[in-house]
Amino acid sequence: MIPYIKGLAATQAHVAVPPGTVEEEYARNGFSGRYAHLYRTQPPVEWVKIDGPLRPQAYDFRETFNQPAGDYMAGRKPYLQNKDVRIYFCVFNGEMNYFFRNADGDELFFIHEGEGIIETDFGPLSYTRGDYILVPRGTVYRFKTQTASQFLLVESFSEVRFPDKGMLGQHALFDPAVLEVPEPQPSLLQSDEYTLKIKRCDEITNVVYPFNPLNTVGWKGTLTVWKLNVKNIRPVLSDRYHLPPSAHSTFVAQNFVVCTFLPRPLENGDVQAMKVPFYHSNIDFDEVLFYHQGQFFSRGGITPSMMTFHPQGIHHGPQKEAAIKAQTLKETNEIAVMIDTKYPLFPTANAEKIELKNYWKSWNS
Image 1 (cartoon, rainbow, N blue to C red):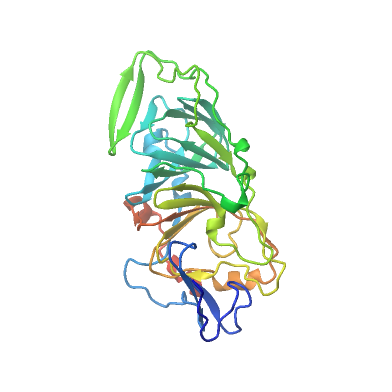
Image 2 (cartoon, helix red, strand yellow):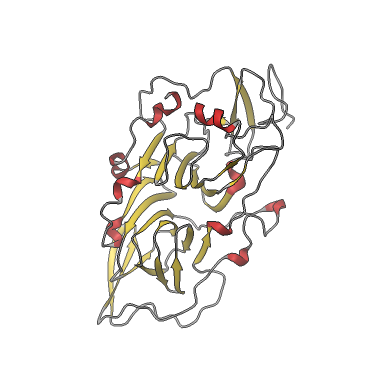
């Protein structure tokens, strides 16, 4: 469709925004559907009061670090969830003396801190900070930490896969050759009996074996456990145009996407190009952002180990100080994981305990 242009508006999105205005992207299906750019005289986030549950939220996981759980299942706690996905944060230190299988969904781990080994049906993989580990539904595994570990965990009730890179080509973002997969090896756990905990419909069944259930000696095929470190992701860049978050997609599943924001140069090739994310109102997606490392350039007061949640129906975008700072900023050093969901997410009681209650005021502070 040919777009209409009415009133005071820029002809190129995110470039040469008319003086005295701010740009808002109002779009369907994330950033790939029909759209309108609205040019407003005041940022739509400069509210003075929000009365009701629909407000931007932030959570500080540092509150959970003091006492790492000695049991893996006790250490993984859900914070946001809907019918497609559940978002956990896990703090664990030690060695699992049992095995675990999730029969409800795929599990995507992002290693925020720590080092160790994950043993699986396909063999073991070592892990370190910045690793993604994708464990398909039904895979048996156990963790053995070498240092206290903190995981962001995304449980998907549909298959997690890599995005179609389209015209960018199959080697864009990361070459599939950088993915690491396990080599079969004997499990390190030795016992007289071995317990496998299976989660199905959120209930646990304990199955006891007289032998170690991780007894694979060989495998072949296209379905396995994958590991990808953020150092091997090469973000798509534009020197003259601010790309939407979808350009940074790392994993996709039914009704949600996982993106990775990484250090990169900002839009320095055109003085009129926007350098900070445009205001948008999340018509079709809830947005979750976990901060792993560095300073996220569109937010103040947010540090690594925090997570923000911007629900559908209410605006968000850069804070005042970020917009001013971006005028002279040449690059960003952030590493963050974003999860966008098609259907509304609901905070759990765990989230309420660590919520930063005044986060919604931060655009006017």
